[in-house]
Image (cartoon, rainbow, N blue to C red; front, side):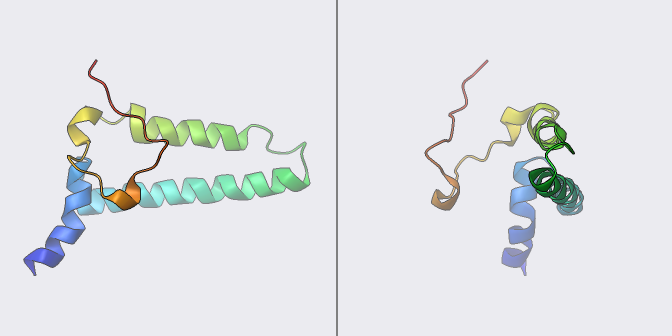
Amino acid sequence: MSRIGNVFRDHPASVGETYLGHMRSALGFSFAMARAAVCCAIHGLLPFLFQKTGSRAIDDLHRRMVRERSNPRDHVPTSTPARHQTSQSVPRTAA
């Protein structure tokens, strides 16, 4: 049971959240992205509608995830599994 419990706690703990807090945050992000996706699809068909909705949603999600997180350097995992690394990853530098 301990191994299974760790699977549910490790990542949320790495970003300074509990399992339930992380679930609430992730669901909030998913609903915001779904709303933005619908608006972008409508904008594709009717370009005069939702002209700034997609970019505002991205800015808002970035602010919520990155800029408003307290002490983000404290929440960086010590190792990143290979499947999550990308060539576009930007290394963190000390401020």
